[in-house]
Image (cartoon, rainbow, N blue to C red; front, top):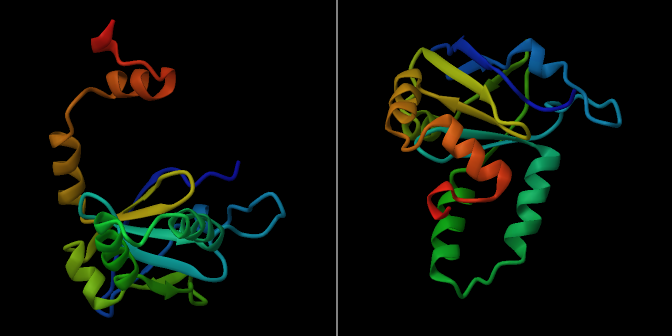
Length: 157
């Protein structure tokens, strides 16, 4: 299995470092290379989290973004926010990454952080913010799954 999955409570030290979960660090891609090795990109995520992208996923995102028109105002705004907050990170010998201070502030991170796998990337959350996000999301898990997986809107039937 090569998807990044699961939920992990981790402690961040005073320098802004925390270890990526060993279970995730050991996952390998189809060429038997660890998914979370080499360059990783940490940037502003959605809904108040941080997103950590493996190199291959980041390249896919850049390819998609490169096809969009810079004349679109929304594209320019998103690009500026997304890329200006991005940082290249690598794991150290202990499997830790260093979160830059501007991203710690962006995601309101403190000592306790929540790392969740989202298939091709990881999200880093303030645990309280994540709980709030889940409580505020409209629609049940089952309704959303039905709509996304079947491609139909149950309200239109």
